[in-house]
Length: 462
Ligand SMILES: NC(=O)c1ccc[n+]([C@@H]2O[C@H](COP(=O)([O-])OP(=O)(O)OC[C@H]3O[C@@H](n4cnc5c(N)ncnc54)[C@H](O)[C@@H]3O)[C@@H](O)[C@H]2O)c1
Image 1 (cartoon, rainbow, N blue to C red):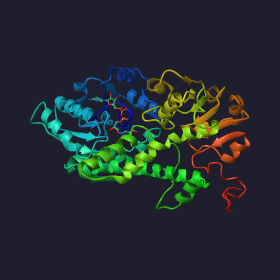
Image 2 (image 1 turned 30 degrees about the vertical axis):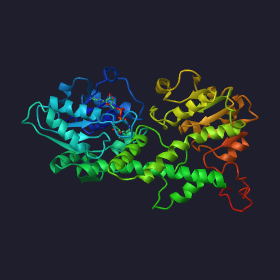
Image 3 (image 1 turned 120 degrees about the vertical axis):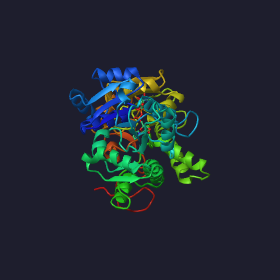
Image 4 (image 1 turned 180 degrees about the vertical axis):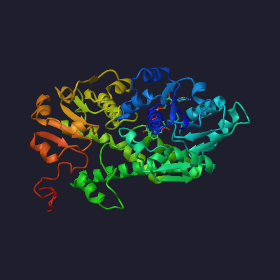
């Protein structure tokens, strides 16, 4: 049983600390935000993450997991210090802001009373392992002590973070100190996952390359979706047809509103920035970001087209279903909903919105005027001129669509923009909606085997 301190108790820190406690270690989660720690100590969850609360309760009651703001108590005799602090994009720039990481490394060094392994869980630019090592060495309270630094990037997804942590595809460890990397590897042995041990820079790069690749898949399928809209093909069936090819795979080929959240936007930007600093021109990454920026505008374009063209949003009410950047989380960071709602308000529309978990977080980031937060989906659609679905919550898939349409302002003309392709276009048309998905053929397919272009072709549906 090892003593572990996790520095930073956000999405990654809380999940990491809790799961390491679940594996039998004694874990202290440290944060600088008093209110966050007070809530956790009072048994309250600070984030919404399926399955996490049960694990937190169990490990707190077994005295393997605790929360504190007292750095000295948390760090002094830790065998491992995990850094899980935020690494946001630097204000007004593209690089990752290392301020919090450096502060965490200095805090660790100042409170250590014995040799420790610093484990970098935060996503940090390539080369940051050296920065953490140097900051720690400069701040060691006792120069006879030693630290080793191991990069151990985190690949969990919000919404399934506990499962991802406990059943990872792989564990990546990078260090110049092989013994330290192996020690960290031992913590993960109960998970029986493949462990890759490599050098520090390579481990850091694996994280960025993985996120950039997934973001590329998303932008790729969104570009294909736009072409599908133009040509009359259905991107969902295109993705299914592509996905059976093992070289391609089906995952992350869901056309929608582009990637958001706390990782992909900042990590792709940071990688492109690192490439630029190295004198390289990251053409693919630049295109991935550009496509992503444009993608969320598609909702506005489709709403305007449905409501009568440019300026038609002025004075209209739009129901926005979903606020979080994805389902099963309350995280609003870089959520497409923020841009979409802001653009709606700028065009003179008012918004009635609903999200199962993210309303509280949304209130903190969205404009206060013009947005009404509603009790459920039907409440949001009441009196609305149009509905836009922007998050893929499971419960949105099984809505009573007749009820939803009946409460809209004009049920005979009920535009529904499905930004997440949750519904079947033909079924929605049958239900009386003026339906638009993303890349579903843009109304050019007519369901009888002809695509509206004058070419015959089977449409893949019975
Ligand atoms: N959120 C994800 O899905 C995810 C997935 C993989 C990797 N990551 C990476 O993990 C890191 C953390 O992300 P997050 O989403 O958990 O961030 P977060 O903002 O939710 O949490 C960071 C926490 O660190 C605390 N903190 C900052 N400086 C501190 C210090 N000196 N001492 C103690 N606490 C301090 C903050 O108060 C905050 O609670 C980032 O680098 C991110 O890129 C995130």
